Image (cartoon, rainbow, N blue to C red; front, side, top):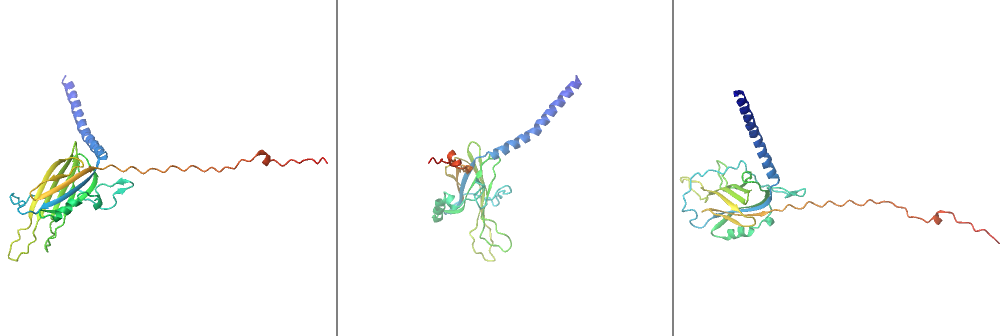
Length: 260
């Protein structure tokens, strides 16, 4: 009896171990299939700063809010948008492909806003847990003889999809008025603001992420894959034919007997 119980327990343990080994393989297969069949979207993002008097003055800001993790993020590249008729993901789109250009111009003319970063691209969109963040970075004009200046703007923008599109931002802004200081004056360095927001989105609708100092406009549109080029129809084979001739033309002419 005891021996049968031990054998039964061993079978249960083997079954559990087998399931534990198979489960990660199934998850990997599902994630791989999801990435392969993921729908494509065209995204556009405009990051801006509030410059109206008193913007952000009523908030308490941390001296060191941390830095966005960009180890897993992808930088947009330039170049051809398609290859062999198929779109290339994470390629920066040209100005004529953007829809927020007028908003950028309006902010440049405004006394309350200053546009900072404007990008558009296409990509397949997977589950939020598998989504790849897009890296953004704006170089600083502040020069230092001792160290490389930190960027004015840096961080990640990530899109995923479940039932709805999901937008996640982690953006850091360094505001430096670049004032001229004397040698005896202390330079406090730039004021740092960090924006960490999540938002559920709908396709083809403009979304606004609010912040006392920063702001983000984002729009997503479903991208339909271009139809594959039609293969040319095979040319009909030319068959050389010899024109048919009458039987009479193929036989020698008959001789008419002279009866006279």
